[in-house]
Amino acid sequence: MENSNKTLEFKLERTIPAPLTEVFDAWLDPKIPGNPWNVAEKFLLDPKVDGLFFWALKGTSHYGRFTVVERPVRIQHTWVSPKTLGKESRL
Image (cartoon, rainbow, N blue to C red; front, side, top):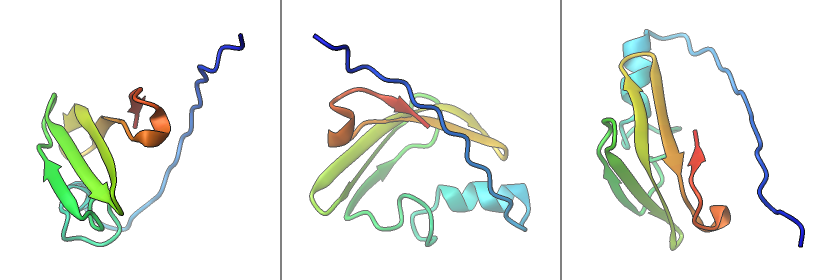
């Protein structure tokens, strides 16, 4: 039987011409267009280490937990959705 566990690693960078604190705060504000939470139909967010998030879009649930929160420079969290087959991805 073939092992289907794969590790994919991506690095995405984008320069946004704004102060770090504004970008950091906007990323966590569901009212700001362009962040992952903005289009959620159901939404919970507790952006602290070990804090959880949940959001649903078109009947599909996505959830995870924050593993790093260093305002204003870094946010890291896990991600679980039907596509991850119950396994955590790290973003």
